[in-house]
Amino acid sequence: MSRPAPRIVMKFGGTSVADLDRIRAVAEKVRKQVEAGCEVAVVVSAMSGVTNQLVGYCQSLSPLHDAREYDAVVATGEQVTSGLLAIALQTIGIDARSWLGWQIPLRTDAAHGKARIASIDGETLAARMRAGQVPVIAGFQGIAADGRVTTLGRGGSDTSAVAIAAAIGADRCDIYTDVDGIYTTDPRIVARARKLDKITYEEMLELASVGAKVLQTRSVELAMKERVRVQVLSSFVDGPAPSEGNLPGSLVVDEDEIVEKELVAGIAYSRDEAKLSVRRIPDRPGIAAAIFGPLTAAHVNVDMIVQSTGADGLTNMTFTTSKSDLARAIQSLESSRDVIQYGELVTDDDVVKISVVGIGMRSHAGVANLMFRTLSDRNINIQVISTSEIKVSVLIAAEYTELAVRALHTAYGLDAA
Ligand code: ADP
Ligand code: ASP
Ligand code: MG
Image 1 (cartoon, helix red, strand yellow):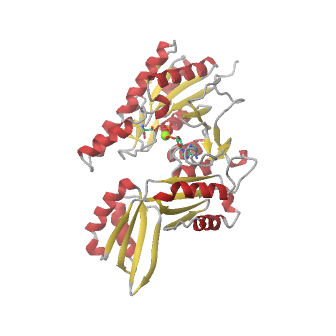
Image 2: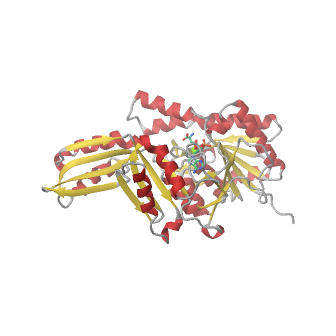
Image 3: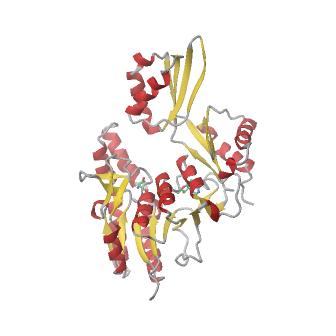
């Protein structure tokens, strides 16, 4: 019996489908992969800039808009590109059909704006693929149990792609984007960033969660859990369709597949940070719960936290949230002011979080200290610090982003030769 055809998911991000010429170029890439004898499913993002525009429309009408209607609006970007790419494929003789989240169906929970995938019916897609058709799936979107459209959070098409790959038992999920792989840091801000042939799921997960937006965090989480092989590669480079013997991008793999383990895999930054300081609060048991309880109830995600040493029975609590949660955090703190009894609330969203990530940190001391020394040598003040088993993060003033990332990249020996 002949071996089954390799099954590949090809995901194309916003810049890869930015206009009709790009969509034609993507159709050519898909054609090559089909002609190489593969069964192919495609997942697309909205054209670049479209999702931002749609989000902007919602925000302009009402900053605290209904999340169900937000999803109804922002999910449309992907509907357009899935239809257009299906047409482009049909035009060059490839049998293709567009699929929206609800048509698959890709079922999610009801957390509108950041829904999590609950289940996917992969069988219908797989049957079409066996019959030689290419499904062109609108990424980013799904359907909740009540039938309403949901979206998976910014960058969520990566997660759609990995989830589809798991559901149809794909051999590989290729994430096509505007850089040719995963680098030691964002190649757009550090020219000497080095491309990694391979990176572990764990390191990629940590890098994504602290801001390396090349892959959405949940996509990496899911790939790790479902053992999906993920490759990140460029849609802007011409070449033969990738095959197991010829993978031009970066692969996300298990730790034991990496021969040369480095102390630090990469450096990430996140500008989506806001700092809140609740000052002159009573230094008493229960004060943290009094602050963070209402924030949790208001669905504010808190990240780094420091409580400074108290004096005269008073203390300060400083913490960070995403910029988009700042307004809700302020609202929550102001409405619980009588309970917390703080003197002053000070906020600052002109900050950036810089993180150094590497599984080598588990067995080597001094990684954090090198970070602190490097920043202090540049006179960059650290406002908040947090650490995990394989990561150290610091919050600094946003104006030092590039300087700090470049200096750290050099200090950890990551610069390309
Ligand atoms: P897409 O629209 O294809 O989903 P994204 O903009 O979401 O693309 O992600 C690709 C971008 O991620 C790159 O243009 C790059 O600037 C950025 N990036 C951040 N960190 C890294 C990294 N470590 N390696 C590669 N790219 C990175
Ligand atoms: N278009 C959506 C966004 O910009 C999803 C994605 O591109 O992955 O967040
Ligand atoms: Mg993306």
